[in-house]
Length: 619
Image (cartoon, rainbow, N blue to C red; front, side, top):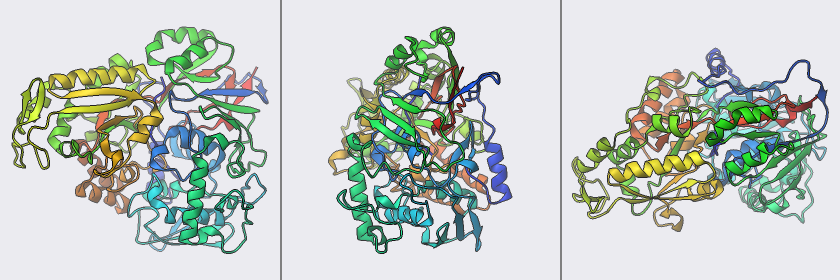
């Protein structure tokens, strides 16, 4: 089983004692299943070279290479398991399978806060781009200039947060960047969720066409230095990123600072990486090649793996094939659950012109949530390889963030409770479907904007490729029907589902979608501290259903500045437990990984980042 995950986002170096304590606590990773790490016998002999084959999640192949990624492409398969191999963020998260910052793999040293936490100073390490240029503070400024001029196109944008909360930024020398903030922020939050979002970009990209030569990093008046120029550069780079057929041959994407560079890439999503000989980081690749293989179905992947022939070095076991565990172990694989720091949900479109007003009613969301039988789904469909989700704050791996309310289900499975919520708010069963009989805004009526005679005939699209997802959605459809909610199910690839589920306005053609379930939910990255602004702040790029709540905005903002960050986080998550901005469903382990016994050096990152540079073959 491998679930597909929308992106992502939590961890980093603390600049205060409180932050250090928080990180230490976060580093304790455990669930009812074994922790996700892999090692080889100390007697095994390391072999240099070889090709490792990694199975991509079903229907979720990479299709966007530019790190300033828009909402429709903001997914684990693009960011954590593709882009990050080539383009390193300012700060790297995950030490083995622990949810904490990785100082050694970060491009910058820990940030220094001063001026009552309104000034942040960052010093870069000595890295080089593959074209021979030195990575400098100008590359960070390039990212900031593009971001400032194109922020609404960026999936991680939260109005009022990064980069809006940066009054100015400067590069006093080649290795130093200074940010001046608009007020005092919690260093924990600002490091985890703001600085974490920066990926230095090579100056070779600072152009508006392929016909232009790569500019000198020291050239004055480059396009990104004006707003209009930065918009043109983004338009060019986004256009290049929208053509996967050119990824391996492009003079743009071949300039990397990560440990890997593309050797070949197919539009189906097969990616062949080779080591970047100019990589400046502490761990150089041992493998000769790293290959990512696309699959449309989990079963297709498993059929290839169980056939042997080393066609897959690092794959996954579909939950429906758990009985095959002894067999795959007998042919040379270790079985290790991969647990990510995230939660799983599906989104309703609050701006859908017909059903948006219905989704905006809390009682209706409560009714929908009462129809999710989390304990049964976890035991029957996921075979125990999952934890429940009752709020946006994850329960696994073990972490200091989730409070008691996030561990308790206020809306347990109950068809009768769902039905009663509807009938007590003006709905009546007509030919087996609940229909608004009593429109209006009083406590016993359907609610603002819900028209009389509207019947609950809803569409729910989910990502194909995993049998457990089909089982869950069919069980939900059956329960909903008993409550008088007629749900028409459809499935599509993960990439199609996340393309459909985008923020929209009621009048837009793209706003016809009603409910979308990409089956993977959210992994906390590049916002590593789970405060929710990126997901549920009004106008945020990853607020896919356009949820909007003044109280939620206030509680989210408090987590950014509070001197008691855990108290502020508790207030936020307790509100989200009750308010149901999305429909929570069980969070499966990201994968039941199958790792060849011949592959050493593997650790399973809790933010789902791949680090094949640490892998090696043994004999």
